[in-house]
Length: 361
Image 1: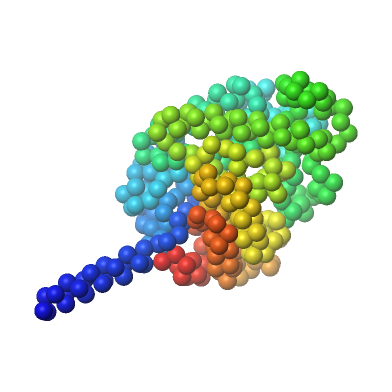
Image 2: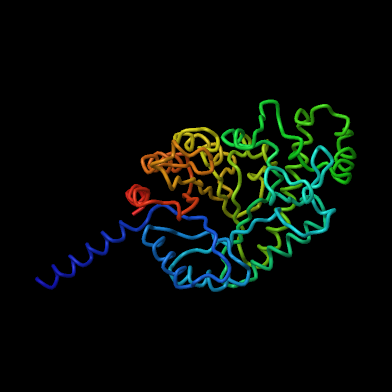
């Protein structure tokens, strides 16, 4: 009898442990410098795993991806090779997108110096992007290639960034960032629609022009996905919220039409001057837009220096307080998100982790 009781107790313990397994797919975006200390990487990944992480989205040098991804697998984490796509320096001049003022992005980047954005409609750019992404996908340890900056430049900035850049988008997009007005794109658009976009006083009022550029991004993503899927690998992407409420208007991402395997909308409420409750609203839109075709992982922006948040002028130093974690996570999941992604795990304080652990572990 005693032996039976011991066995029953052991089974109950196992069942209890099973119930405590993380129920929320949890990811984190993080950049890792060139030639990283692999033991530090392992310790970091082990820490993330202890907090219930499912996987990591890592931006790393191509040569370092195999070793970093191998550690992720050894720790029990899925590996998304996070890659900025359209922002590239040192490419042929004619590859770069042209803004409404007729300026190419390599010589006149919008907002910040590194915004040297390629034209997704350029066939040579498309070939370059497919080659770059498939080289990453060919690494055996990579589970997903994650597409970042797979879009046009922000023709409209999130409301919380207007003051930072001294711009007002109340009347529409910023001509210095609204792309692409190269001869090829305008000629193709005119051939399709009969509309000479150069003769239009306010291109923002031409929905066909917005749709044309959304389609060009979608066509590029489709080519990338076809190539990666043919290799037996998967594609994820981090995107602007919406898509109709923000992504389409701001960066021409109609990502609900992409043939990807997982999407990570950057639902950074502070950038839009919205409270944590906004995540429930925008996530509901996102889940409805994809209609079950692929899972939505709601991206959360974390405020590291949260006790001084009110004193921080730069909105990119803002983000969720520990007290807002539950609202953001529960709101996203109740709206249908399949999981959560943190930007960034390195910004999480002990207080943030304590609140997240209550929900995940």
